[in-house]
Length: 218
Length: 218
Image (cartoon, rainbow over all chains, first blue to last red; front, side, top):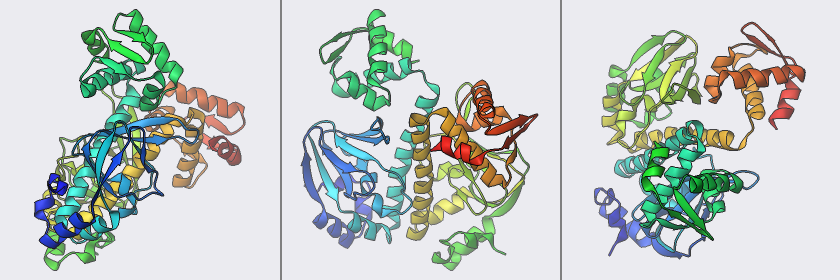
C-alpha cells in the first residue's frame, strides 16, 4: 500500500516524481503527547497523517499556547516543512494528541519536485489556503467572540471528535487550546455547571445539555 | 513601461504567458477611502500596487474591523482574487488608505497560467506564505500583547510610514486597525499624554517622546 496515493495530486505527477517521493518517504509512530515539530528551526518534512490526531499550535514567549488547527487522518501538514519556502516566517509547534502514525515526506525531495511541477505547486497552494482559512477563522473567534461561546463550541467539537459526551481533558489543556489561563477556563466551566450544561468530576467533563451549549454558541 | 516586470517571476514565464498577462491587465485609480474589494463574493483580480497604500482588513458581523496587513508600492494582493483557489474560505476587505494606483490582473487569466506554470504557482505560494506570516504575527499580537504595547507600536509604525511624527488620524480609525472600540483607544492615548509620550489636538496625534513609546513597546 503506497500511502502517497492519499495525496489527490499523486497521479498528476510523472512516474519518476512518484518514485522519488515513494522511495524517500517513511512511516513514523508518535506516542500521545510527543512533539513532532518545534518551530522553524526544524524542517521535519511534510507530514501525512495515517492515523491518530495532531495539534498545531503557537507558544508565546512566556509559554502560553493557542491551537491553530488540528490534523486528522489523511490531512497534510505543510508547516512542518517550512524550509521549503523562504516566506514562511513563523513558528508552529506540532504535537500528537493521540498515538499517531504519520508518513514523513522529506522536505528537500518535495521541494525539488514542487519547483518544476505545476500540479504539486498548486496542490501546495491549496493546502496553505486551507490552513490560512482556519487561521482567519481563529482570528474571527478570538477578536469577536466572547469566551463562553468559544468554550461551548470547543466542548461540542471535542465531543464530536471523540464520539462521546464524557471528555477526559484537564482545564489546563483547554486553556492551551483556547489561549486562556486555566483559572479563566475553570471559572467558565463552573458557570456552565450552574447553568446545568455540564457536570465536572476529577479530570472529566460530562456534557449533560448539548442543546444548551449550542444555544450559548450561537 | 510594463508594470508586470515588477513581478519577480515575470521573466520566468513564456512569451505567450507574458503577453496574455500584459494584454489583460489594466491600471485602475482609487481615491482615498475607496473600497477595492469586498469579501469573497468579489473576484476583483490580483492587485499590484503601483503607488499609494492599501489596507486589508476583516469585518465582524456587527461591523467591527481589524487590519490584517497593508500593501505598499510593488506589493501584490492575492486575496482580491480568491476565486483562483477553492480553498480560500474567508472574506477580506481591501480599501485605499491614500489615493492609489493599482494594476489589476484578471483572475481567470492568472489562474489559467498558474495551472500550467510551476514558476507562477510557486510565486503565488510565496505571496501567500508572506501574508500567512503577517497574520500569524497578528495572532501573536492580539493574544499575548497588552493594548498599550500594540498602540505604541502602531503609532511608531504610522510615523514611519508617513515620515512624520504628526499623525492625522482619528481614534476611531486606530480602533479599526487594532480591533478595539474607540473608547479604549481614547483612554490609552490619554494615558500616553499623561506619560508625556504624545500630545493630542483635534484630529491629530503628535509623538513627542519616541523613545518613551519604544520602551513601552518592548
